[in-house]
Image 1 (cartoon, chains in turn purple, yellow):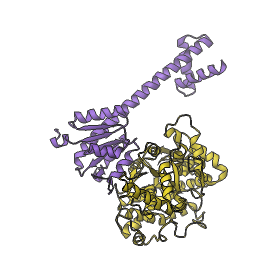
Image 2: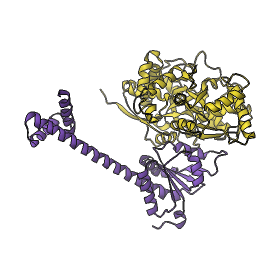
Image 3: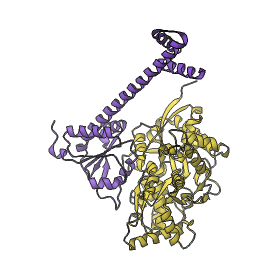
Length: 199
Length: 404
């Protein structure tokens, strides 16, 4: 489906302190045909920055305390120049729940129609979720690497202390872990701790 | 033994989340068969949204947000019910040492008197205007916040129009201190412990405890969705009982050290970690201890000011939520143009709090406010006594206002 040209011209402000997620979001928006994307990582003096940039749509990550600053722009006040509303559509509760769950929130500036923002928000939700998955995989890979290091050290200790081969040492760790219903890495950590205490 | 009922509760790291944290972390919730997962949040918008859509079962909610949500102002309409008051008072107004000196210089009396300080602020504002200087900027936490209404109430009483004469900006509490240090704001109104943190860093002077502007001001509520309350009546009463015990535990002076340690733990109100101040792990417990005793260092020069009303959690009937307080907050929403005045809206605002559920949970086990509390339930330093059934009359007594 082609994006109508007027949507491609929408100026979208992305406020996210995470530079990688910011870049992923920008790439996604550009791929989808939204060429006018402004990225913001530093939220100092956010209100002034928003007025200077003068966006049509604002996307902000929910880990950002400055979300409350945006809420001020709904208010009738001298300092508010262009009204801002949060993207809330009572008829589309699912999108809002998905957005909060993914950790992103959207604001509409200057009375823009909600349906024009929905595709942008949907895209952000999927990118936020993809980022979270990547982060999760990275964390798991890191902890797997850590676990392997710990197991290797414990094997070394057992080989030296009990005159075992590497295979026998690993089998002993695995058997103990199964008997005690623990992870091998946890048992290995206990071996290391014990060895350090007995030194 | 039956398994515990799991609940997710969101909170903002402020001293008045104390009852919530102590109930969850010191076993009072478990005693009631509740397994509470506390989730620390960074914004009131997040708390509101996650409560609204059911990601949280309950929340530490700033009282005006509960009213705004029930009225559908500024956001989707989700009726909120609050059977328990997490705190009365606790806010303070802090200014830069430079503004403090300017106010003291323009005062015609003791600036501990909020009317003297507010009138002095008016003179400072006029002098700046005459010199063509930028207006003063003050920070508060949220459009629908006690902080917004408290600082407005104070300065407007002295003749300062909070929308015309100064700039009032929303600032997340953890950014308040930074903003004061780098000159983005000249002062702010925020809850504990952030005023004390500014004083400790030598960049702010506490001008007023808000309890000396309003003797009794409901601050945070334990809030749930009205529908959730209907669907989980028994859990709600257990939640109230757990929090009542936690609040009483907090107010027992013998528990001060333990309470301060529980609150300052990681992922709770560990101020130094939130601000990323290295090697000051003890700062949070110390600051929280001061908050709970109401004995605060108010100036970097070491001046101390004490008031046992500074933050009230389990004393003076503070835990029993009060419809008069909701009426006063609604009146401020009308005064500053956030809500239209109507009898229906007033009724909705009052009905947010449910002292009947509090009483049902505790079976009348506790007296209400009692002696020493203001006769009208508010005790404002300016204006006539507050009548919760006459909002128009309240508004008529003020010249500076947006509507009413």
